[in-house]
Length: 346
Image (cartoon, rainbow, N blue to C red; front, top):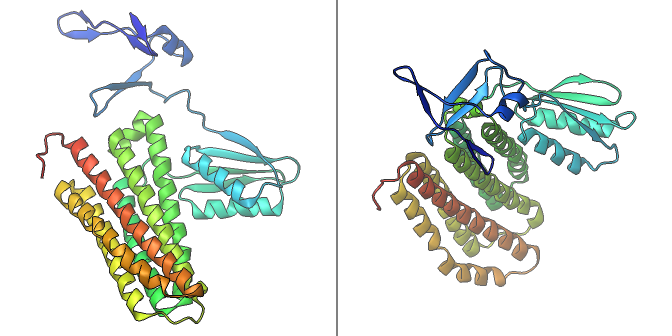
């Protein structure tokens, strides 16, 4: 036996005419409470390795986690902690307070359960709330979630620019509210990937390799960031007030918006189709924006007050959205090469 860096080496032995066997590390068997006669399951992985685990599941996986929270904790801090626990893939989470749990704390927990995919309130008492993840390990295929996020983000981009152009405050508020839908899908992808990294069976159930999981998590993050910029554009409607938008800068901003939207759509298509040539076309198109930057900034510089600020915010968000689309195109190229190492260069 050879042991190095936590890996246990075993020589393959042959018994009988055609059976190959290896021995198991004693420490691994003892830690999991196994003994002679227990059944192990083997999971071949896409990288050629073999995952081994006990039939009843990994003993190290805890089905329940308890955390103590403070009623004085700011709502934003509590919500972020709940999101972190959710992404960690905790199936049963008990939230316990010191003394009676405050109404504000319960409101944050209920709002969290309503917004996320999976968690439901299982039990409540005067000083605790128990959340249970009621969905299975693979309720939604991750590629489908990414496609849904893309559709939502594209719609948010278009509606944000429409709200800005027409100074429609109700449409702007609708764009801002939709950001929660993108966030919850992004957090869901994070949870699925985290769980897959920890459990070979979950990884097998979602039908993706570890590199593919990393790719889709990166793509999800890019889409979530673009949605944030759509929210920022929508937020300029209230900033503008009754200021009239000048025609010339508006035309330039709409041109940049069209480039950003087209780049995002083509980048996602190149990811799904593993199309390196199309991904490079996205990078080339976005690369044409910087030469126009000075012209747009000069036009914005001739304006004053809140109008100048609003125009600058919109331009910056559109530019950042286009750059995020180019990030997605780079992710698509890396993904295409990873799954098809012999793809010829375009």
